[in-house]
Length: 206
Image 1 (cartoon, rainbow, N blue to C red):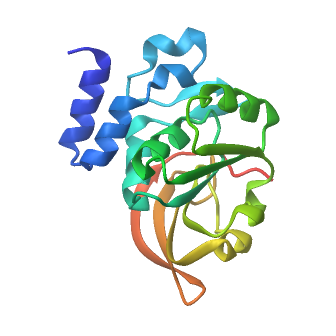
Image 2 (image 1 turned 45 degrees about the horizontal axis):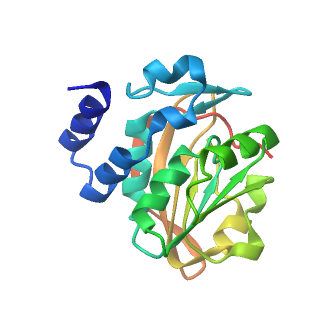
């Protein structure tokens, strides 16, 4: 087996859904990383993409996608969308009639991700502070925060539909690992539904 097949087999053994496995199979990770890192594209590790940012480990992204419980036709927002890899995976799962939005604070990464995603017609990427979300594109069925946060910004809660799901790594960045947490919106408040410890993310920047 080649490296990609080994990675897919590893994710399959960890019991991720067929929809998630199919997305990882279709999206070429090497298209989202710097030229000098392409040989490592299908190793299950995080890789630097410049500006102090990383593309997350495939296993980590698979956990996040699983907790999001994505469905066809959904509107999904990712905060800290970086190089756009997770956006592409989400796009595959929600399908052509779904809509995916990325919000990234670093303008150079926004430009890079737009190039990376030029063939994905249902994705829009914006430059801005993730703490504010994308009010004019709300409401969202799902929100993914791909950066360490100590709490969920209230503006993001207000932009989530009732019964919608937010997934985020909760905890202090750099000082220790974070806990991947699934929140469900109920009566305009977030309720914690699931926690998985042991993840490490760069901080949510404003």
